[in-house]
Image (cartoon, rainbow, N blue to C red; front, side):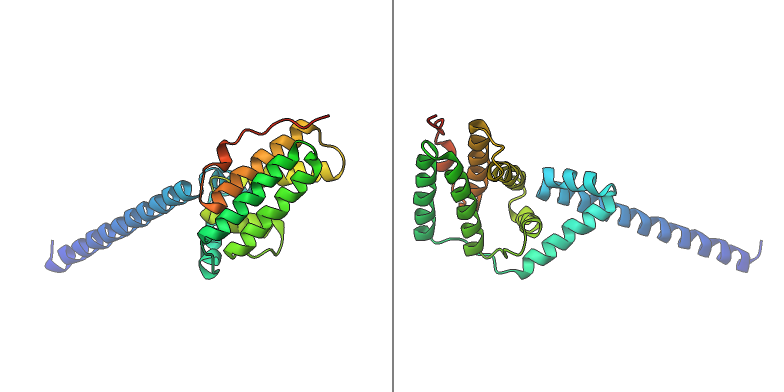
Length: 194
């Protein structure tokens, strides 16, 4: 075999090795990104993969959500704001006993007010959920469930237990938005008087 032949073989081996290394690196990077998205978005990751029917498309959507929210001016609430919202929430829970339909409507309004105060745009419900999923992925399903129950209530199709569940779902999101879990998430909700 000639020197030129050996050099050609060595060049092919180097190109194949570099290609394999790059391929391995890309797969590793994608695997790490996928694991990161699953960790960050939790159940929202699986829900979106299922609804898209395509893992890559779902991951692009989640990455786009992260990019969008990074551009927003999301802020923490001051202690005074948290206290004020906490007091308002306590009033809603107390009101539930005598007026569950009104309490659910008030809970929806209060959650929106907290989101707006924190800096989340109020464009439309789907966009709010997508934005919330970036920093509040563990509770965004509660927002969907609460809104569905509130809509059923608005149409007169919700019983007391449905309304109680709506308040429980709103409370989970509310507490996460306030970034305080006491005392609001552990306050038992009493049944409405009928």
